[in-house]
Image (cartoon, rainbow, N blue to C red; front, side, top):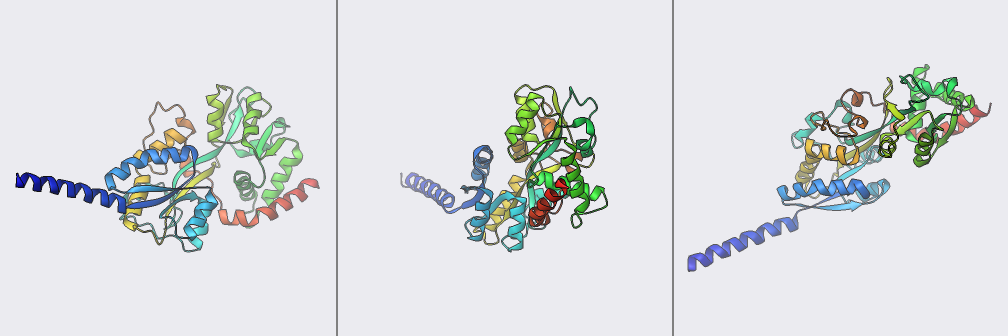
Length: 340
């Protein structure tokens, strides 16, 4: 009887010890709300069970994540690349150790931004077109300038990253660079003065509607919005990734320099980069994997909308800091050129 009580007592003690570990171990991870958080929470359950550590979600907008990092209130930061770069310049992150994050070895080369920042998942802006009116599949972003598309082209507003990236791309194609963007601004002014643009829009739902009604024949569109069109049963709108590449939408990840449990933070980043989690975000949220070993099911309905294989290597990502620093000045110059 005494032995049985001792065994039972030991079992209870072990149980309480396990619960104590779980209570003591908490990892603070930033996320956006909505569907992104829903997927994050779904995949994190397995991590919590395997590591006996709970995730505390720090939910907010991208600028909030950076503020929380400055205050030392987070351990793992998922954010936009621009905020990751800002945090890196402020010395907020610790270096990501490939020995502790072995799944880093599977990353596409261009998914490693720096020793402190890697891409967790990506979407992109593609060239959408109406198959009924654009009978030859567009091969390049230069198609937007063709005279046959007068009042049929849509792009994002000039202060949006994809249009700013297009401006830099046009600068590079016409003898300039991000540091000499004049040729790109000249090209964008030509596009405005051509009469091709229905508008440069700030609201994506308007762009989707213009493609849906057939008013827009050609233009840039995020893959998430392409999915929206296809889900509505629209069959005459398709898309292509031009030869110059597409403009990425990036989720980046960092570990805070003062993370309470650096080893656990590294384990979580490694888990984020596992093929299992990468496929979950791809199939649930249409965010493409940043690791080469993530296998998307062939029967996934929207597989073609994901940036995979060669398309990932052709993502066009000009210097985000320079774009942000210069966009107001560029917009002013463009307005002046377009009025001449």
